[in-house]
Length: 527
Image 1 (cartoon, rainbow, N blue to C red):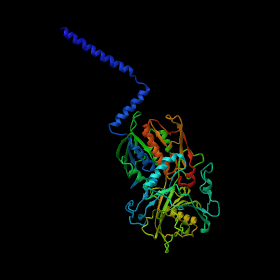
Image 2 (tube, rainbow, N blue to C red):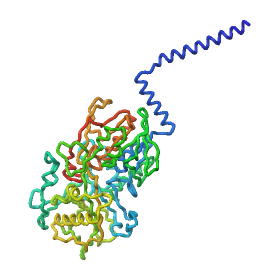
Image 3 (cartoon, helix red, strand yellow):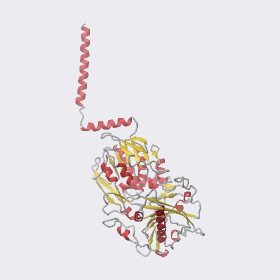
Image 4 (cartoon, helix red, strand yellow):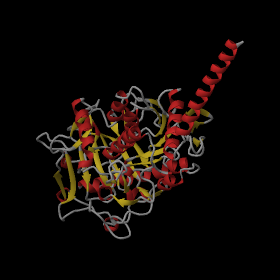
């Protein structure tokens, strides 16, 4: 009996000691605000660990989206959704000889189908300034890998009026709009002779083109990104393609198209702009972020930058021309050097309708027929604004009118006689409207950097931590391929380093600033 009482007494002692230890631990572990934040992060981490690395849906497979995905893959599972029919790339897309034409009416045996053609971006350049050091290193790697080539000496020129100090690519402009004086010049087209036309060589040391088209760049990024998943030829509807399905403490997004659900994602990145990006976020809780995606389409911006993102529009016309019986170009001697220094790309500064000319067959030396010359000309933004139509389905009459006007402008620019480039010489032509073309202003940010105590200027991306959604693109840094790549890289690196715990780049901590380079050239910062 005494032994039984002793055992009961010892058991009660043990229970009391255990309860005392537990209560002491609870009292010592009263949650503070700091702990609550930590506990939330632990909860998110545990949830994510159950399915691996956190997931990111990137809407847009241009250079910004692909760069973001590539730099995220070490710590995230990025999935890219791209509308490109055959491959991603956005403005750095190229058409290749083996590409299947779109629709039943396409002709795979056409003349243009035999050539590599860049139909949007024609030049990659490295902007001035220290903030593009990483991009310069990437360009060096692309050159070493054979992805990019330097333009040969004297192959990049500008076409100017020999009779005056031509300066169409002015910096700045009027108070009301970027290059208003240029917009008012030469209301009546001026007919030049060859003696009125001057060709001036430009320094092309920092100018590059894709060895196998500008499409070489996005393909190289993908080939270097084994952990990036991509859904090609997928249209994410601006109406309901992206939905916020999470809660205040646990943001989450669903992505779907045409009733097909791709799943839910921890983060969403908007890597394109224009009306679709605006509508994509219009119903989301990320109101401040959405306000920056609202867009105007104009050929110029005021000097102070404007209140909204402003994009211009550009027509791209590619034609296959028969060479003369002597094998020479019908475009005249101005674009051909007897010493072998043939011109590949020309900035057009003596004709307000046009901005750039590229000889595609000469650039890639890919012509299957030496009797054919393939060129692409890009219009000015003012011209595209005046003759703008529905991008996906240009009316036949509008297409014919725009083509005729651009060819006439080409003749004037080169000092050729009227009807030199006539229908009998045009074997095939392809006109495209680049509706949301080049950003004319940039969202510039200044806000405190808690980690360094310094001011972080021009962050180059946007992120809303409350809703786990970010934005990258050249309109957040510099209107160029470099700006797009660097913006994607910065957003990705920031997410990897911070896990998206802080919002950055949202209004009112910033303002739109006019891009003098983009307003001057009309085709982006390519000089």
